[in-house]
Length: 116
Image (cartoon, rainbow, N blue to C red; front, side):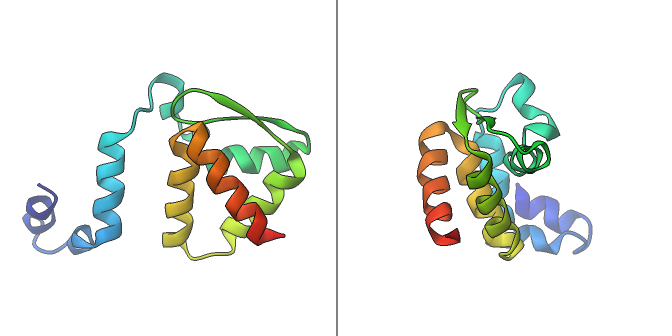
């Protein structure tokens, strides 16, 4: 279906055949996000940036609608590390962070370890 959409516009959406774009589309279809989690401010990078702005420990909400308390200093290190990598890699990690609490903890700790 993605290939059909890509060729309908005469090559205008030729990047739709790239693996990263196809992976993002599949993840969007398989996402369990509901209700409030579909809002743009529920994006994990936006939540981390909000923590940096407010400079206090708050909770992060993942797509499974569970919350996890995160320290401000750790969030700042992870956000800075994610913003310093290429967008394709950042998207990969942000999808892992967004998915559920278990993958958030695992990915957050891994990025934090590298950031230190």
